[in-house]
Length: 166
Image (tube, rainbow, N blue to C red; front, side):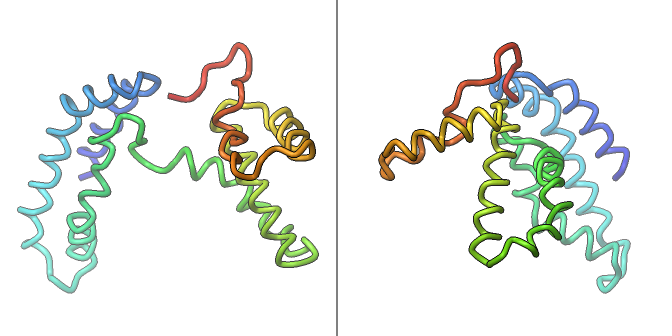
């Protein structure tokens, strides 16, 4: 199983940075057969383990969540795993203790929304300070609440000289 996942990740590494269309094509051509092989292997070997054992539990869990596990095969924009998101929220998780001193539940809620938006800026290759400054200025100038989506980080200009994540 580990060798199969290792092969999947090696191929995915060659697709990283490509357009969503190219990633989709490459995954269909190279990853789908490996995922199909993995599913067949797990299905065939499930009977080797006690139905109450941890191995059978892990195999059943994987097979029962197969659609979610292989969703990346359907959309080239979707990452193979959640590592990028987990890395981006790590600073938030590390500073979670600081939110205990936010002053109130509403303060903690506001802090978490702002922290999430700033991390979204980073993922969208947008300067967080420039985005926040511009957004607050527009809101203070009376920007319509009906058009808040236009203020989201993914609508803000990218940092010059850098490429946005694919």
